[in-house]
Image 1: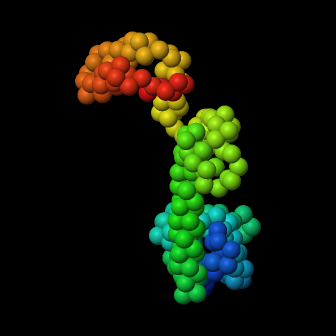
Image 2 (image 1 turned 180 degrees about the vertical axis):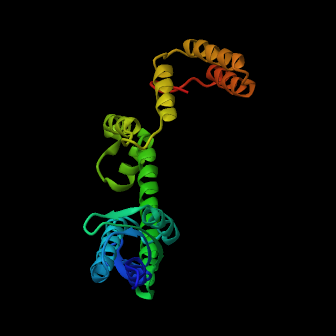
Image 3 (image 1 turned 45 degrees about the horizontal axis):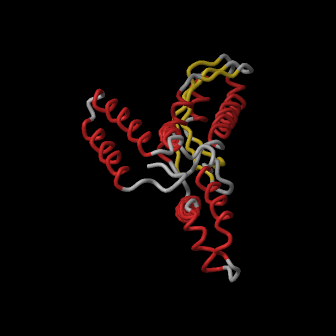
Length: 246
């Protein structure tokens, strides 16, 4: 009499499915190679048992793959292979099995992935260019002179009378920082800048720079200390404009 396990194994040895990826309209082609480890049924139940295994494997793979990007096929292959290699159990009928899988892309899906990558690169480039333009403009307008220059080239009104407005607008640009775009080091630099700005007199600034230089010397950073000392000496020769700090 034929062995039911052998019969079921023959029916699930190799079967395939086209399963959706995380990208709409792009799917993976998956070849399943199931291995039946144990089952408790009669020969008459072999077709139903094999069908249950195929359905269960397709459903489990589909749930996993719909979260995966088709742009990284090798990683998806490894991840799905790990999932399928784990032991699986069907309760009714009672069957224990696992599977090996091969994940590929059909030519149409591969072409769609390549088109998607081209579009993503194009969008990333456009986004980076636009972000740089905005950052450059914000930096330019953080200086009252930059604001006045803009007004002078575009506004026919008596822009010289608007210097106070220019200063207010420049201060807004200088203090604004997009959330999440600046790291802790930048925040520290801003805090130090505000601290130095709180000492309006050159002599006061020289004292603060001296303390900073001494701290750098103790931290064994002589090159940085030398830079600070040069700035402190320059204060005497060229005092900062009112309201600004070196």
